[in-house]
Image 1 (cartoon, rainbow, N blue to C red):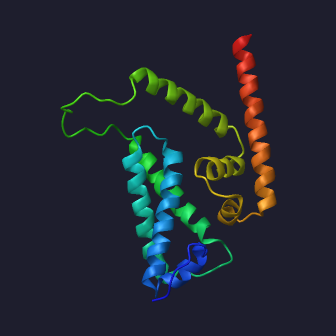
Image 2 (cartoon, helix red, strand yellow):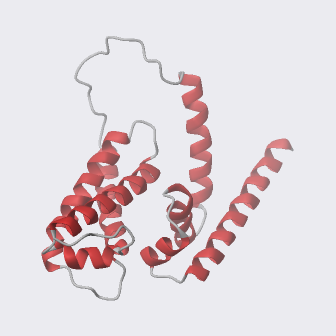
Image 3 (tube, helix red, strand yellow):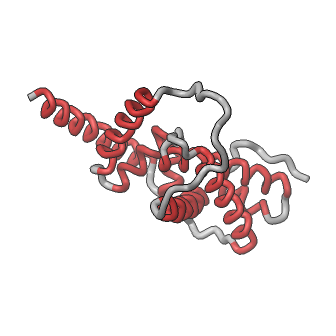
Length: 192
């Protein structure tokens, strides 16, 4: 078996994964990490960790299933992974809106987590950030999620979205400037 380099692109790993177990394992590890980070951002960290883990696992299964028929078409493999992830998330979010999920049993211990007040403040700040981000154009919002929240490099984001690194930097700069302006406008309205 050949050694898999950590710097190998996902597209190259995908092409090798059908006949190389190490490449397949490395591909799935990296896909799961990408999907999990993306899910955490899109779902928020408020009780959605299990859901994020489940969606990341489903994405890995979908990628594994698609590998035998995957063909390189000039689009980065990352774009395929993000497409699958966003569709799985949409399914999860639709099902979550249908109703509450009952819990199996009452806890036996006191929860040492954040107080309801602290959790409410964090939720409010996150809700404000998400509200402002929803006002951004789709592409700018996606770039900020991938760059800031998921932690991808400029090059990785460019590969995932099929853009140049320069275009990513410009769009990110414009998105952050627009967010700052919206926040300043909102805060000025609160003071008046």
